[in-house]
Image (cartoon, rainbow, N blue to C red; front, side, top):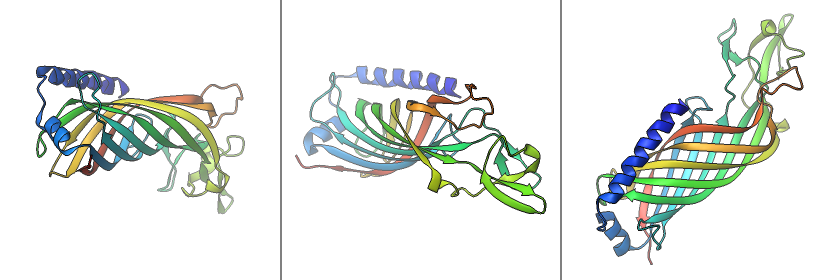
Length: 261
């Protein structure tokens, strides 16, 4: 999937550059920015990526246009907060004899909280009420990783107990399902890291002050130590890692408003 997202990014970036070169005249939105002053947008959305399930997490975004141009194009300050789950490529969802499902071999969840700061460069502007705006986004920020134990339910005689998965104690045959999602937060650990992303953004205004759009990009994330998402019996195993690279798509909604100079 990452290969196809990369191809899409290159194509979309080429479209944006071509549109930006079509004319050096101010567009309708450029005129709107110059006439009404800075424009602020506040959006929220859902995201999925190649290192997550269908629903990867939630994103909150805020942009504000800046007075200075970037090589002749309008730019905006970009702020975002992402809360996502990162899964391991080797995770395999397995059905037990019950209707409950579990991921055999999974040791921990990894949740990432990512504050981000960057720039949004507008390649192609839309009119105030219709059309599509194409822009490029570059952002970087710290990552607060939360490592939470993965609980499983296992049979011991006629009873079923819940505990963090341990490859030394729990065989596949005795596991009957996954434990509760909220189990283990009291023993969660924090790991710090850094993240950076590059994306192409498509903004569509349904009404003058309401907007929706897609952000499609690539994100790289690195932590200060290896994150043990998968359980391993061999201490020298390299199955786990400290860095992750993913392609992502974010669908967002929100509002925009003109600010006074």
